[in-house]
Image (cartoon, rainbow, N blue to C red; front, side, top):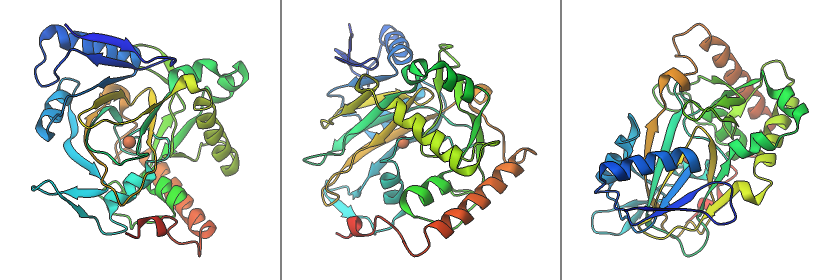
Length: 320
Ligand SMILES: [Fe+2]
């Protein structure tokens, strides 16, 4: 019989013990699904899931967007050792970018329902994964701010976030995450399963229609800062090898913390697609996609001008 223990001194999150994620009975599944919706994220210590087991656990929650993939600053080899990635490897760029608060796949037509991480190797220090509660963040906003953001939406693009956060401008490549599209999502979201309202923001958001560029940037920044300003709304997970965490991407922000990149940090990631009924912005073939494409093109042009000469800002950290 599994035990669900709320995380101490936080307004969200729980640890689930006396459970084996590779061997769940119906009662466990019911408990885990209910706790997932209530607490927003769940920590399962000592699971040691494989790539396949991580995917199988994810399948309980919906359609797999990607399953059992290494999220790592080193490529794990079959003999248990690790191979360096090339500096500026796209995988490493994603890892570095995601040290900024974000929700997953908001830059895709359908944003993600939830994510699952399992720790395989962890650095001596740093490398935590942190979560922030956008439900409590929204609830704590003053009425004037709630009113101001009520009808607002922002475009989401990881071409923009990678350019803005890292000075990284990969070429447009349809079929990859650098597809040249931006997806418009409301700043305030009603959770499709709980009905609870939350902010829906993060590093991929930009270009709120109807606002000046600097106003949009300041508003989005201030909302993330507000959500993360109260320690009760932020949880930092110090990984132990074997831990598994699942979180609700529709209601929580997350980020990774820096560490010594010469040490391996290897996680298994599985991502579950959102329900298109509630998580679809639009398809790239829809007429409204055109405004998103224009917004990305314009924003990237401006970011290129602003960052001209600065180059790739993580270069030194990646020299190993
Ligand atoms: Fe992420």
